[in-house]
Length: 370
Image (cartoon, rainbow, N blue to C red; front, top):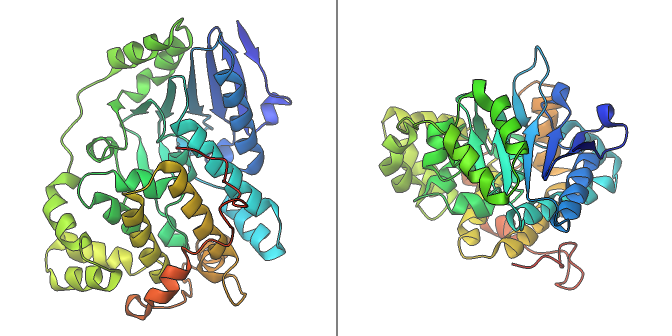
């Protein structure tokens, strides 16, 4: 059986299909590198909840559509142009997007059936959010993973604090602040991927997965396609990463990098120099708090921070709107961060980002458990 469940299928941002006993979700905005919008989040959530309750469905496969002339992508993140437009207009759909996206992330992490994410090509931001909770995270030699949010005045959300905190050593802090891109060997070494397969075999692998009759077959099918993983180049810098990114605050991290003449340290320092100082400080605190938190609590914390990003105290729009303007809208690549420098970040301002605007009972993610 091959049934297409989404309405206006060819135009829908997510194609929802059943193939026998396996559900197939195809992100379907290839012209936008399959960026997530609110309709797409709702389609994913609805299909996953329906299949979770359907005893005939034994597993789910997630993939991204491709378009000739565009880079391959599972999902490049959220729709930044929508974020910018909605923030300036005071559109309530922006708040709805983050609330519903984080609930979807939680659902995927706690999904009761095997969920296989085919993470081919670009997988960033929101794309990480809908794939890191998968039972099987399948990478190819074309995979490029990152949480680059500090570059646009945001922080690694969609559960990013939680899954980055669970990387070995201080790799989570490094990835959160730097937005460093990971190819398959580094991603697997960081615990952000499970299996490497050849991209040329991906279509065939997907077809074999859709023929599974039992959930346990999905892992066997993926394992049969796996190839050896090359050594991770990033792990060669593990000692330096742990030394620098274990320091107590952002200023100390930057000072340590500044004093280290090694090429890796200087390259990292240059990268941090382009990112929002406030959001790097927030991201550092996020990862460290998240190490001791349950996923549901961590996602509620992220929702609190995101509220402050788009509804900053004292009015205005903050670094998020400015960062998106500079990198996506006007493309001048000259964001005017507030504060402008790492050493100007005040700890009280960082702590204020973690204060919830809601009570426990009225929090938009109050229903999440575990």
